[in-house]
Amino acid sequence: MFQPTYPIRTARLTLRPVTIDDLDDVYAFQRRPDVVRWMLGAEPRTREQSRVSVLAMAGEDAWRAEGDCLTVAVVTDAGVIGIVELVWRSRLERTAELGFVFHPDHCGRGLATEAATAVLDWGFTEFGLHRVYGRCHCRNTPSARLMARLGMRQEARHVESYLFKGEWADQLVFAILAREWPAGTSTSHGGMRR
Image (cartoon, rainbow, N blue to C red; front, top):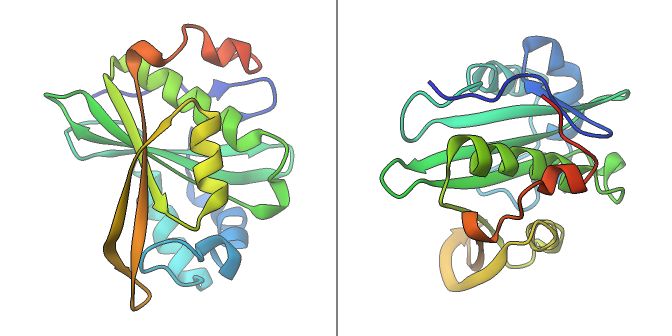
């Protein structure tokens, strides 16, 4: 089993496993149409759907086998403001996929970048990942910008590669390699302590 030493702390954030006590905070952003707008197959959730989601995420606190998702709640004094996940895609190739969702009320202050940086730093420096990639809808500009801020390069634009809400959509693929991940990145972004 592989997991960070919780909680992960940055200058402004605490990252920790999701718990059922996070339901109200998670529901506050999962119910918003502007949050799920670019998520494949996602619609604004009911409170019960969010409860099911939170219970599922609560079991994603470590990597036990290839394919597992490590999901952390991003916490400030305001409560849980977002979720960052890292999916272990390949043991052999030491590859993972980054995902994230944040409450719009807390965007524009670098908090998502700070949280994702801490999770990537764990993946590269402690777990020993070789490559991390992320994907988004071509019109999901905030997600594309976040991945670029993390130092990920756009590697591909898959033209009309998937059906999104009944229409063919382009998907952007971003990635970064371990050798491109600067040592001490989390420290330069506010200091990750364990």
